[in-house]
Length: 164
Image 1 (cartoon, helix red, strand yellow):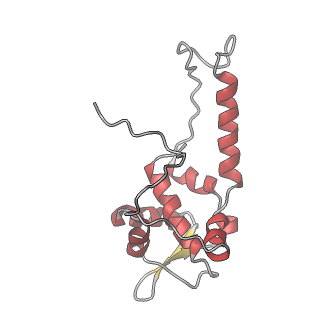
Image 2 (cartoon, rainbow, N blue to C red; image 1 turned 90 degrees about the vertical axis):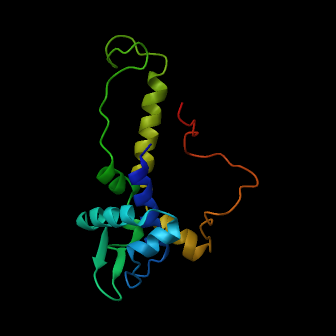
């Protein structure tokens, strides 16, 4: 669905959404990196990109830091996705390498088109309000990186197969 840079941008923005109070509370790139277990240089670069796009507002110096530039309910995953991902307009069919839409559709065609529509819809309708509400209204806290998994749950990520 998306790459590491987008994943880390969502992680950084979700932290800013959790502390959203109209933009008064500001977090430094280092605080966000530490609190999310992300590489600080990558977070700083991501925040710079998000700032240029008007998604976050940054202020330098003591007491400075980053805050969302507008309420979390006004920032969608799609807006972040568009900054860090290329649109995939490939028409290569996985069934024989032909061009999709020419001739009979392959066995996967309808499922793949439906899945892409679902993902696109999810990115457009999901806002960062979900993270603000989880932290402020429901009292949910992120899991600490060092926590041990006792009962695995289904993950949205592909399994890590390692390198051969």
